[in-house]
Image 1 (spheres, one colour):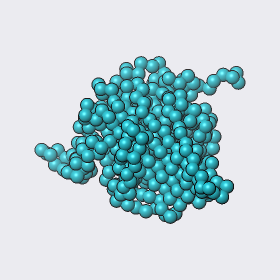
Image 2 (cartoon, helix red, strand yellow):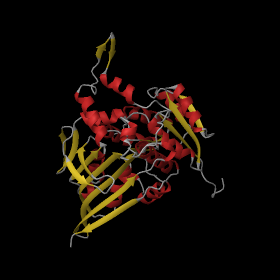
Image 3 (cartoon, one colour):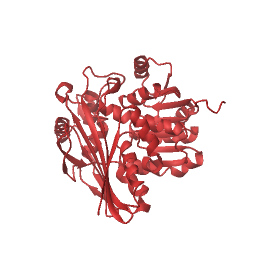
Image 4 (cartoon, one colour):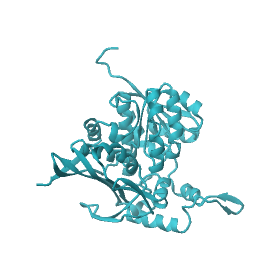
Length: 397
């Protein structure tokens, strides 16, 4: 092969018919060195709808049960990387198939407990000669790389605070619109969360750690709460050698959406305990998800106007002086007619997948983004989608 010839990438997406995957797919098919994009899903009809929507000769599809390790490994065997775009409950299943197929792996993120379990597969991935990256959406994902930008410039790291602020200015026209996977949001609303405080993980009740922040317009003053996120699990590991003491993740959701979902959950619709409805056993949460989730392969009819601000505040020392970095990005984009929520989850996963396929993440094993991703390369990829990173540094005199 000519040394100047561009390597062509083959990237698969499990859960490829789901809406969380769509912006990753668009990004990949618009990337010149991506030759094939394989969409894997158990729903054959949804795959057909998705392929008809995309109208790209790069797209291939396959009906696969993600819990069938042998079938999934066979489908992945000719691919450089897979993104698990399905629920995080399938992360381990897809990882098992990757080990068998010798295919690199990433996903859009899971919650605290799932990340801990995934990080435990480091040696398995290393022995297989492949690389896995946990959590490559926006949070986790972009925020991990924003944090790395700061920590790379500090001698020691003491505190990390991650703020994820989401608003939706078209909420009335759009009704009840989850900014990302509704089941994940319900879990965040109902499960105990964690903070890493004074060198130890503390388990806390839902909606603890309230913080009010006056963000720049159009965000304004928002209430943020602790959520059960993987960053609180991975960053104490990544920055142990720099003396990390405190890590917290706080989220603000669109006010109207939060109020409506709290009402539904408080009245039992977040429960997974089955009840009998006219002779049919059904969990209230399953009913809620079926009613409100957008069907795979289909989009809304109104242009969304949601946006997200990600801010990472990292405090440590440089040259013996206390130093604080505020690194942030404002995601207000709606390419391909998608909501920003779906854009900001999917396309960062495509960036990580391309970096894996291009050999820009060389170390073998299983890592979080802050352990393995080159910030310069990653930020250049963000800029291709008009996503820019800003940093402010405050040094103690």
